[in-house]
Length: 183
Ligand SMILES: C[S@@+](CC[C@H](N)C(=O)[O-])C[C@H]1O[C@@H](n2cnc3c(N)ncnc32)[C@H](O)[C@@H]1O
Image 1 (cartoon, rainbow, N blue to C red):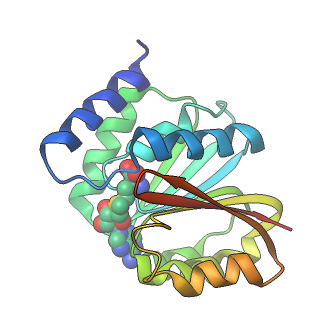
Image 2 (image 1 turned 180 degrees about the horizontal axis):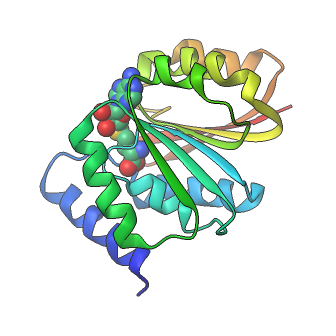
């Protein structure tokens, strides 16, 4: 087993014993497939936790790619830093500690892929704040589109009905991810 897989399996085992809201292997497969398809050079993640999904995406990327990931809690970001270092994934990962709504407007990059997995009621705000940094073909994956659909209804309405995205709902068990490709 390579180092990234080893770290992922350890975090999954931790998540079975304690509350750890990682995307997990089943929804993670859809996230990894979306990333594999787009082959992004610049990835933005909102909601790092301890680095599970960053490692999962990073495994699919080349060494000239970069992941920017935002986490509001310093301790989680520190843990993520350690896990990401242990995983030895090819891309550089830049962890920014702060409130996503404050951090996103300060980012200069354009992004080819985005994973949104922080405060559910703010997904729409995150997307609107980053929309000028996305381009045709950018894939935006949003976690918890099943269990927290009511809290992210404005987001789901927007990606499905604004005409700016081609959006697909992937049901996985009792939850889902929404995968939206910018038109
Ligand atoms: C569901 S967890 C992320 C899980 C991670 N994406 C994974 O699959 O391994 C949500 C994370 O978002 C962070 N978060 C919540 N609100 C945030 C905000 N407004 N800005 C930045 N991070 C936030 C939380 O501290 C938490 O670590």
